[in-house]
Amino acid sequence: MAVPLLARGVQVTGIELSAPMVEQLHRKVPSDRLPVVVGDMATTVVPGEFSLVYLVWNSIGNLRTQDEQVACFRNAARHLAPGGRFVIELWVPGIRRFPPGQAAVPFDVSDRHVGFDTYDMATQQGTSHHYTRRDDDSVRYGQSNFRYIWPAECDLMARLAGLELEERVADWDGSPFTSDSESHVSVWRKPRSQQ
Image (tube, rainbow, N blue to C red; front, side, top):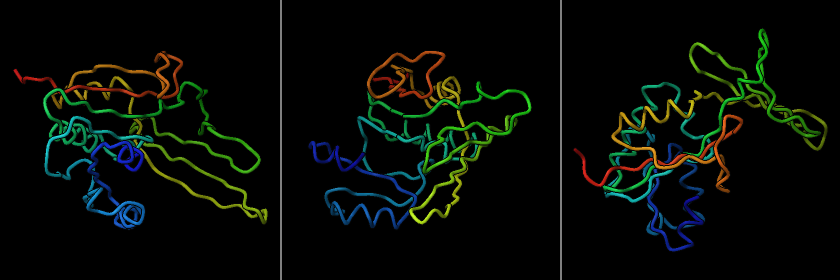
């Protein structure tokens, strides 16, 4: 996201947990044009105030506890100028497709990939499982762990951080968010004056 924004003339500063990912980014764009601080999104502070802070591709789910996710909302608010916006792109867990006793929900079944999520309903912890068929017909397995968050829980975290919900849509195309939506793009705004 940072590189296309920069190409459109938007100044961008980033926070990235992985130093090797920062190195890859700086092979594309020099660090003097796109500064990035290595650290976590819940606690790392960068200099300045911003009109926009964003988390895309479900990345807030990488924070594995509610406390870390609340801290992330507070950290975003800390970086926003008055009137600034915090935007999150996040999927809605497929738990509605969970019949009693089922252990997993598939999200992709194709010739080259099978993916499914397993959930712990008590802790909101989940694991995405990926089985990918390679060209030599061997299969590679990978997994990633996450904590899922409902849109209403995001709204509460935002309120705790002093932010107000401005808009929620189902996707970047602006389609309406409904009870059947499988994702959301939510925008919270920092008030121009704190009371």
